[in-house]
Image (cartoon, rainbow, N blue to C red; front, side):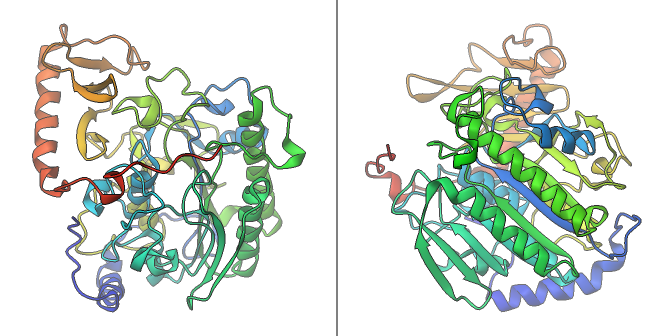
Length: 462
């Protein structure tokens, strides 16, 4: 169930986008920066299942990430950044729409091979929101927001070009697709050890071809999601097994991208964001955070690395602990492009451009909501985290009645010790926040679980 408020055809939605931009542009407050461009290029590097502790800037030690280190040293590191969900499909839906995934109908689990679900065409995505500002848009890598019906391919959602795979690389059958804005589709077999290299190479070609106009690129790597397929030059190059080899390969791609922008003299015109869709699965490091991918509302599944890089605009060598989320990308990118947010859309994200550019130090969020599938199970404020459920014997178990879990994130970021007995007023406030959130989002819950989960899920590849 979605509440975009934009019923009708896609043509009507695009007309609304264009007219809304024209009417409201004067209200936008774009960031001013020394550039020949009116609007910046924007690149989102989205890793798959990369943990908070897998890179050196956020405390990783086993895997060397010199290029990501350089990016952090020349940009701003966000230490309290949350993915839009603790699983892949809902997380990607939240990132692209600026909305909690439950609003899009994709809040439950992930899309499987036999799944009919997909991102509704009524949803306004980042590329669609940026189109009125003249952006060329492309997605290279993993989609995982629907591979059947109108949700497929991604060019139905504002991307001019898609080169990638429909879902995770542990799902089959798997092919590599190349789709242009006219809907022409080419398909080829997958060579797993070359996937990340192919994604990057096509992204670089797109950047070359659109260097004279603003562009939005999502480089959605399918790694380090298991199983690992490191490119041969990176095999056995890490102290952290094949997983570390793949992260080393990702680090090399980051270095190549930043070097490419510099060679094109675009580094001062381009915002690059590096992050992950959720925490690590069976391998990878949470950096001491509790739980992992899919693990309820705890930070190990939700809190992931995030670095913003834009020389001359985003402060270098800065770290911020202000709470932020992937749902902030859409309103933030609109602001940076001098655009208003899409009219008629209930956004949960906030414009964090002032925080990103160092003009502010406090988050615009009073709270972030944490979901497990379609259930609100936690609330995070700047200081406190309240989680009312945990997994026990394979099911989500309500804990609040007997064991209230109120964590002081300034004292105990590992979420190991509850302060509920010492902070009764804070506990009451957080319980009230959770109750309000559940009441707000209850109408969006699915009446039944998706049909793909009504029968046994396909086995993972060996």
